Image 1 (tube, rainbow, N blue to C red):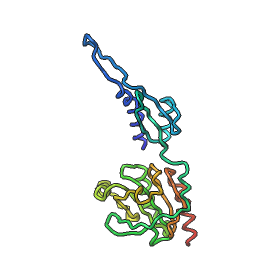
Image 2: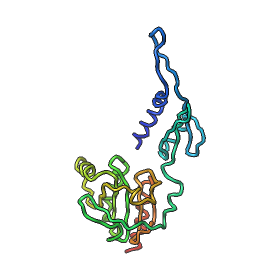
Image 3: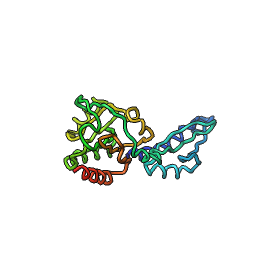
Amino acid sequence: MKKLLVLLLFFIPFGLFAQESVTRSEDGKSLIVQPKKHVAFFDADSVRISMKMFNDSLATLKYIISSRNVEDTTAFLLTRKIPKNYRECIGEKLPDLEIEDLAGNKLMVGENKNISLIVFWSIYCSPCIKELKILDALSEEYPETDIFAITGNSRDTVRSFMQKHNFKWENIHLIPDCSYEEKYPIFSDIQVIPFSVIVDRNLVIKDIFVAEGMRRMLTVLDSLNEEYE
């Protein structure tokens, strides 16, 4: 994620020059840069800001970039990755959903354990990989919890990724080729990974964790597992 941020900050200034044309002078000895468009930067509330403020906001990792052309101006806009009200989903019920793991087994979330932890991830997300490695190692400490790792990456891609890095993750149900926006439209506004959801046997959402790290997640799992002892 940090590497992606560095690349974004590196390429934004060069992207600005793409809005310019370069021609030769009449004598052919020099180049003349002629702006074709103006450039403007806006925050997530559509307020115009400086390029420095734009880059400082990107550094928080809370935003993604979009752009649009308006007459002679190219506008770069910040869009929040995480909606302010995502925790309002707590208490709602997820739909029953049959899913298929990497080995082709048919599974149902909430079918076998009192608690299910659903982690949405991608093979291109380093924090996701670290999180799943930790969860796989700690899974025996949470006997009442099933862990489902859902990704939109294809079955072959995930299988090759696991083999390449010699990952086993035998204590996690790996669910490939599964778009959470389609399966769980309630989460369609959350455009950042990893994010994780804890549900009970009735698929009622107990808590949601969006880019918050492991500590609070494990604290909640500890508390819920104690309830079922």
